[in-house]
View 1 (tube, helix red, strand yellow):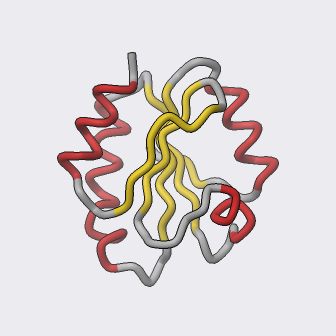
View 2 (view 1 turned 180 degrees about the vertical axis):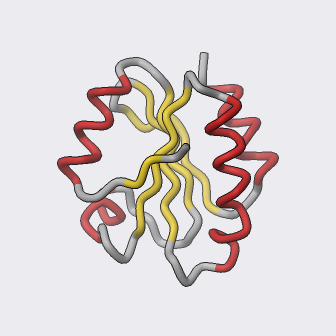
Length: 106
């Protein structure tokens, strides 16, 4: 299951807990239609790929995190490994999301 991030300190803690695992951050908004459409698919990926950490950041509740990652549209997916951003893209494109998870997780 994708874990909701409550603030910047929580995000940093989740980074530390992940170690060298791939982290996928879903930047979303509650009012965003495409975000709602892809949310169940993210949960499917989280269940399928236990070696990947899936996080959710509500941009309206966490503007500081959204600014830190230069988020301007939702959904945006940020891929982090060893606390470094390795990929980022916007849009509810499940095929691209899954392909990027597969490419970056090893």
